[in-house]
Amino acid sequence: MEMKKETQEKIQQLQLYEQNIHQFLMQKQQFQSQLIELESALSELENTESAYKIVGNIMVMGKSADMNKELKQKKEMVELRIKSLEKQEDSIKEKTEALQKEVLEEMKE
Image (cartoon, rainbow, N blue to C red; front, side, top):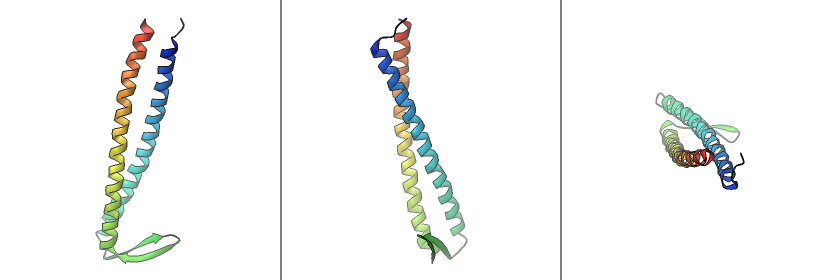
């Protein structure tokens, strides 16, 4: 049984979708790891008035309130990136499912 060229192209497209999903998952994992680190740092800042942060190759002392604000902004940005990746991932998954159904139907014929 020989597959149609169109079906083969759809299978290749499915493989590309799977690669994209894998990349989204890896990026999401990295951002989730950053999010955990930010939440941990924010938690620690609640217990102190001053703290150190690393800037380049040195540690700089700063006010806890300033660092708290900075970390919250970074946290919001990371959360937005995660949401964006999840939307892209969901979109690709929907396309993948639809294309899988098409390929299965064509292979039955």
